[in-house]
Length: 111
Length: 112
Image (cartoon, rainbow over all chains, first blue to last red; front, side, top):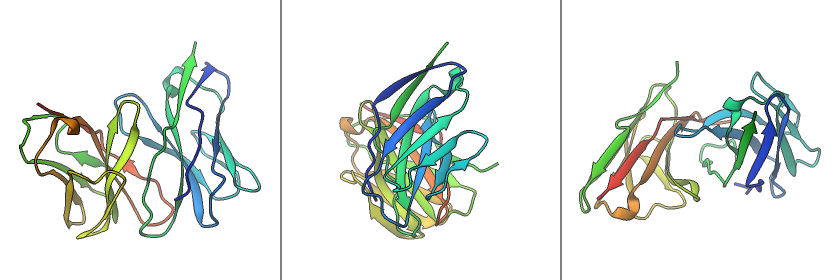
């Protein structure tokens, strides 16, 4: 699976949009981009995934560049409860594909 | 409501003991995973199973083994626990394909 690079930490003001970048320059054609987050003392929680088109759900939006070498997770109106570590992962869809996590971005939402 | 259940939330064991961490999922998922999480090191994959009796080593399999005799249950075994295995252990499951993984709440293991 391709590796990802994320900033170690970011701050965001409550109510503003949080934009979390991820670089995955070695992504291959059959690999999807997934985002998870982990709130302190809990297991990671799935947020969203995409292949090449932008995706939106009730939690967030995912913007993937045309060359698929980077993506951005957008939390449109961040709240204090969005403070967490956010992980960007690329993973193929075949049966034997593992799910491995990098260091993630620690997002701090401030009042 | 989908669920991945880990048998213990907190566990204290002595050095040299054989330790079993159990994980059960009720979603008929093919894939199951065991991770450990340590401060500053993030989530590291220990073992992965994509079917009953099938397993693959992850990034840090040394000192661990796994068992998957039934589809819903994936056990992590510490043959002889050591203090450097004190950690938070997380289990996850997913279907094959482009799907999300579901995580348990974790087991905080302390080896003394």
